[in-house]
Length: 327
Image 1 (cartoon, rainbow, N blue to C red):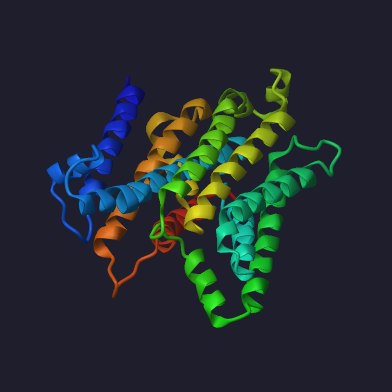
Image 2 (cartoon, rainbow, N blue to C red):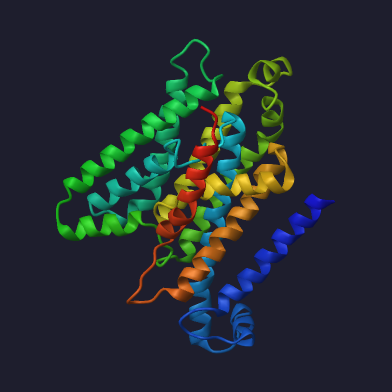
């Protein structure tokens, strides 16, 4: 019953925040004007503000937050490591490397496919490295080490591209993009991000029952018929799709996949089958709330970037978990 109340609470909270986000901003709009614009009526300028600016931005925030929250819950469930998150395991870095490659060569239109491709290549490398051992794909520890290594390599290559940037304009574009923002959101990005995120979340949700068995230990899970290699492949692929599509449209946004699953685990318990969808809902709600606050408080003289704000929120949480971890 408690979980049911929490589920409807998240749904209602998201609906209220969506409506509030539509009329909050630099141009004050009344609730009635927003409603008419959503219905395709009223002032044309208001319709443009709602449908071309605010609606794409809030939908992207929901998609990206959901993907990061669900991915973090699945990774923490599989590795049984409190610090596991898409950023720590290299998925964000690989996606960012793909997008930076597109920016470096001046191919801005190719940022989205390049970021998604980068995340998938990174996922393939991580999975391949876990296959290098005889008991390939069956060790969560190997997944963590492989992810950290691939992520470090991607970060180093991104730094190299920034070092060799052909001109200051290209370098500044890369730097600002890496701070994460939804300023340039549009509906084409929403369809792409929503499609890949939904596919990724389906992969992750499918592993929920397997992860519940895995919480009893790898040997016990295998005795219950869980195919660890298949589970790992689904989690890596689902995470790559969620993170790659998010990085593609908004840049690097970290730590959401770290602390949201912990908060949900505290509220609903450790069962991954429930934790993944709840974390996805909470991740979307959190990122929408954060982006709305940024949009209201930020201005031409005080620009705030979404990735910077989520890092400021997430780093203290990461340090708390690191200090609490057993040696």
